[in-house]
Image (cartoon, rainbow, N blue to C red; front, side):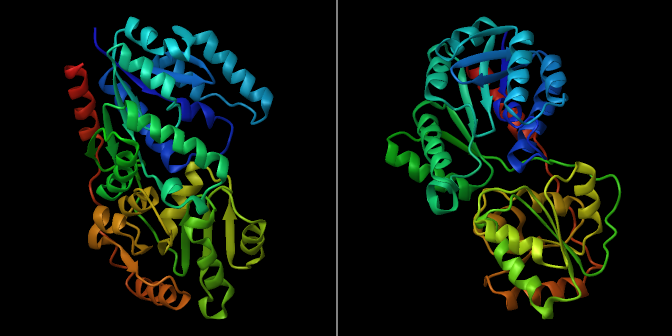
Length: 372
């Protein structure tokens, strides 16, 4: 028997903590795709120094449950995992537990649960370790991340460099950035560039409301919300309305106060999937002033919905989306306002939605199953 194990530690860690982030959605999509292709697949969860294996049905029930975001909620989650696990043990025994369950490939796409002890144990038991690295922004731009998470990220990426058999990247830009670091650490795993598949399907066409714009993403420094605030603070940007959908990340409270003080800006910190879809389908354009990205999932979603996108001129966005976006090369209010006006005047000519698929990811996993 040859089984796939998909790690869902990130999804478990996010239970009760608000709307899904881009990486959360990627993990959720791969959960759906992997378990559809391989119904006997297993799901792994790391909790501290403990390791658990779950069946797809048990994992689905757990992920569909509601838990409070406090310490009591975390305890409930841990109890439910322990109760429904088909195998459990110390992290150092993860490889043996997975091998005994018939696993040949372990897949991690969530940037979480990448402890060196775990990866080493899996490898020692003949299990191929396939890891997705979305970006290494905390390494390249540590000033855009909190110190403690950055250090944890360093340790996880060092573990990937030392132990992973295969690394998947959503873009060649993210591959080049990651492999520069892997080279300094002494080992560069086999790498593959596979663009993300579709993370959301839209069953109704876009119906844009004139002068309504949307920004999606965690509210933190690298996302460029300060530029949008400066734009909407200016009378010249009126009568446009901006909706921001995104949770607080890390930033000085001054940025949050600035957003809340703007009259023609609505900030939805806990938007549901339905609210996000409605906002996306009714906006004149998605604004994406990010300073650094690994793939830019909101851009892919907007294009799939037939919504124009105005974005920072980042190499990764040009690689993935080509000329389907309106790029702003200069991070200035004047340049962005000009782009807004241009797109507004041409809103009756939406972009042609590209085709996205997870097939290449599943093919790579299947190849690793044959190789193990």
